[in-house]
Image (cartoon, rainbow, N blue to C red; front, side, top):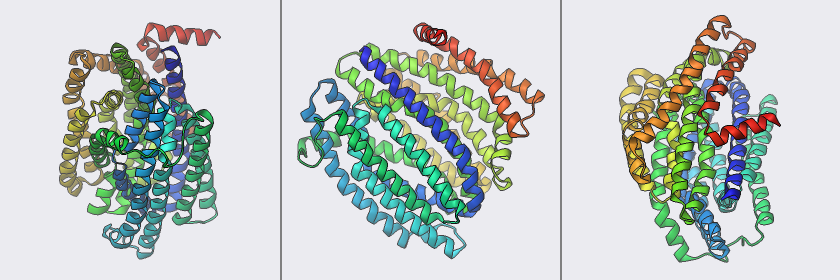
Length: 501
């Protein structure tokens, strides 16, 4: 148990390090690419990526099933079943990846013209990008069983390190290409090449860490495929719902309004997506750890781990929401060109619902790890349905602000009502305990930071980057102090010991 905790903490810290790298890269790269491409071309770029995301449905939930069963069999040190799991998913992904490549070409050839893109040359460039991104997604599927296998082996730290290197190299290559006048097609090719290189290196690491693993189709097994699909059929439904919830905003704007409006919306939604990922990167290694705990029959440890994660992530999410709501406008004014000003309002609207939704990602990890993810599917279906209905109503009247409300309102309604009740019953924890745990941490974050933010903004208006970062530095002091008191006694002791060293 001690070793598992130590590895879990390494996985979590490496996940946050990777998240920090992505935040810094996005902070620097998004204003650059939007200024070079402009709102219309950037809108086409975003639409191409969100379109290809629909082909991720062919994952059929197998990636989460892979992590679940590799970590479960690892808890019993059963490498025969681990190899069957890896090789069976490899065979299935060979089929899925090939379908993605062909499907991307068909979509670009016959369906892409339905987007509201006025310039025929820009539309043709978008089609080429879509085909290349299809190749990127197909190759990702081919190699995914062995790259995702690192997570199942509790080595998210290695996986995260490779992802960080990929992010840095990819950003550097894209900047060089843009500075030298290359277009979106060259950018897409660069993404493809860098991604495949990272996946090949991950496979080499897996073989060195666990020489017992067999790579290929030698252990393809029909009973294992049935086991994977039994678990993943629910995960597939969840994947569909998540695609609707998180990957339809710019597509809907592109179809119902314009590609330019989709381009303005994207940076605001992307920032909130990064905030969500701040917690999601913790949930990924947490799923593997909880799955191993369940295999060992340690159910009380799972309850404690969930409540602890909820407590900490609630503090983080409310703190981030306060920051986004109060600093979005000056941030966007400094960060992006004037035509992207409305992205700030998108951020503020999504931050409100995100404060309540983001902490429940920890609950999602528990449900996936304990085979109770069918409960999550029910909530997500409701959220997706409400979002589509509201989008069709609000986009026509209010444009991208309507899209933001269509995304935020269902989250706010469901994650303060139905979700805590459902999760409490699944884990045998009272709903009141879940809600009070989250609310206490969230209020602590607000009380620790909100008064300071209001005062600092008056004394040091964030009208330039030095003053903006000075604001953030000052606000982090009370935020860190508040976080210290949210920590459990054992974690406070670790912090004190670290500071003493």
